[in-house]
Image (cartoon, rainbow, N blue to C red; front, side, top):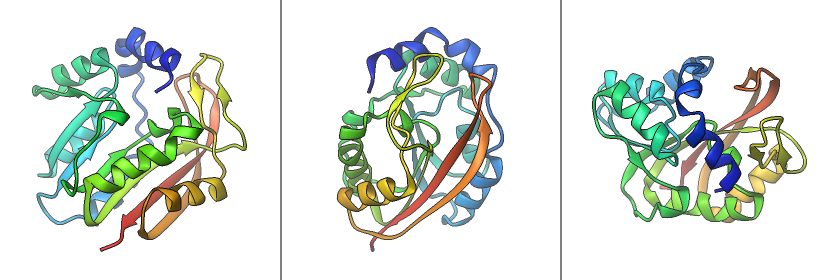
Amino acid sequence: MDEETLQFYRGNAEAYAGREITSRQARLTAFLARLVPGASILELGCGAGGDTAEMLARGFAVRATDGSPEMAEVASRRLGRPVETLLFEQLDETGAYDAVWANACLLHVPRPELAGILARIWRALKPAGLFYASYKAGEADGRDTLNRYYNYPSPDWLRATYAEAGSWSGVTIDTGEVKGFDDKAAVMLFVVAQKSS
């Protein structure tokens, strides 16, 4: 994880929590509809816990995590349950989850490290497990006006990186536009991958 980006979220946890983006609601609903009732979900980069709350309300078994201890604390208070601090490179489970939900967090992983992180997620999924992640589209990595690092991938680069990480029975990439914490509109890539069974 890029240290400057992590420090941004550590220093702005409360402000970020107050500006939670809800435009992903339809994507979360569609993702959860593909899972069996009570499925086990690992959430990476849970932020203030909005998606976690929705998954719990629908009866799923959720392990919510965030790389920022301050953000994890905000989410813990909101949810009334512990939220773990977990950096992506600390994920080391095998075949543990029916699904992984990683909304707007893997976009901060440095490009050379993304395949390795995706491989960790692939290993943590059960056979035929589902995996959602979203990225800001681009052609080369860089920083935004708040000095946060982004890997800014293209769809083709993402497909190749996912293929390098593991065997998937399907990888779909949709595009859309969102307005982020910096109040700037960005083209997003929404990726749903299914691990081979």
